[in-house]
Amino acid sequence: MSICGRKKSLPPRICGFLFILTLCLVLYYWKKSKDWGPWNENAQQKIHPSAEQKMRPSHFCKGQLASGTITPLPDRHSFIIAPYSDKRQGNLVRVLSIIHHQKVKELYCIFCCENSQAVQVVQGEIDFHLDRFDFPYNTADLLCLQPENCQAHFISVHPWNPQLESTQLALFTIQNLFPEKPPLDFTICMSTMFGKYDNVLQFVQSMELYRLLGVQKVTVYKNSCSSLMEKVLDYYISQGIMEIIPWPINLYLNVSTHWHYSMERKDLGYYGQIAALNDCIYRNMFKSKYLLLIDPDEFILPVKDRDWKSLMDRLEKEHPEIGVFLFENHVFRRTVFSKTPFNFSSWAAVPGFNVFEHIHKEPNDIHSFNNMKMILDPTKVIQTSVHSVLKQYGNSIQVPNDLAFNFHCRILERKDLHDRDLIRDPVFWRYNKTLIPKVNEVLLKSGILAACDQVQKQEKLMPS
Image (cartoon, rainbow, N blue to C red; front, side, top):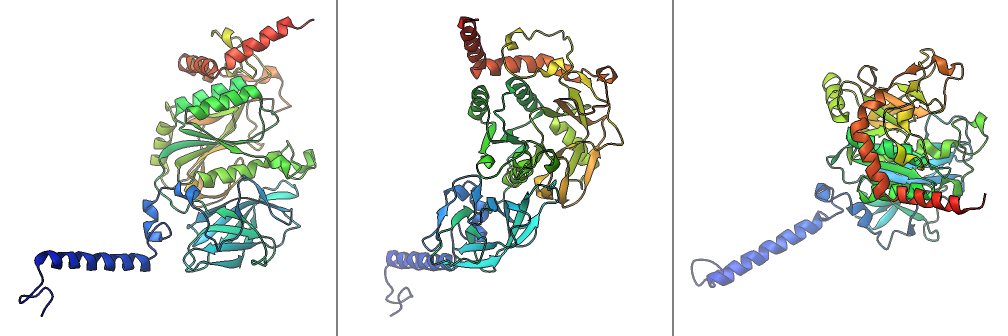
């Protein structure tokens, strides 16, 4: 008797049920054999990158997930920031770190291989970044070659080949495992806010100009700021435009406020600015088409275009092979004030500099180094410094000043120039009609104006 044949066959309903059951069993075991699910490379494109934060290590993967931005290793000379999958150079995991350039000779990468439910240890290659500026500690990439047939989502790092059975290690989630088309066009990497930063007025002016020019997200590596500045940051977080990365580098190292060791003999320069910028690039590699590496007292100003998108469309068309665009720095001295035709009476009590009042710039010395700033495609960058890229795929190009330049409102840079030798350039004034109302709105909605008024009232009540 055949089961579903022509003679003495089972009823059609039973045959249909058996067919469906058989099909389901075949699909189940086929999926299982392929490790179907979030660990399968074929399924990665269907998983949103936020899944990286939701995953938890399996029982065989020892240790606790690192909770901070900076994690010290047992040798106390190595500090891990984050590991990033980098398929541009094979099956590589690039662990961004801050490492003593002499005391650390070797580091080991410990992969938690989900498919085999085991760990694999490989010795990593320590790749120190070129711009150390003579400080003992330096930004470094620990290059971990992921073993074949190891599907890992977590990794540990150890300064010596560890006894895995007895050692509890910090675990790090490998980021950028699920690359996708960037949802944003422009993100700003604003590094190392420190020293109880309180330049509130200039920060708000910069943020509102960034928004007019097309920014969609600003990433700030925050060490410390004033209580008023916290109000501003909270406001922009509520607007969905700001991402704050805690940066407590001073808890681990004796950090300098200067860029070179000869200026202040400490462990690490400028609160680890270079490490923060590199982390920002990899953090946003598949989130934003372009990154701007600038400080809150700077803005890259288009001359012929209305915004950054128009500018970059022009540059893309002229230089389709270029991934890093450099913009010449122009210093507008904030110690030189100019009268303006605008009404700033409501800003009088707000701490910080009013960029509208500083319209005199230093002529650039063509024989001196220029602190250029960049707009870059993060997928083309391997390592960066502050004013140029150290390693990249492809080339960089300097954008002509008649297209765009970096406006930098700061203390004097050229000590050989008297104020009378400066060039008057009110280029910033062209934004007054749109920018001033925007700044007023933020100062009001963020509570800054009310807080400043309260401080003034308290000061008047104090005995003289």
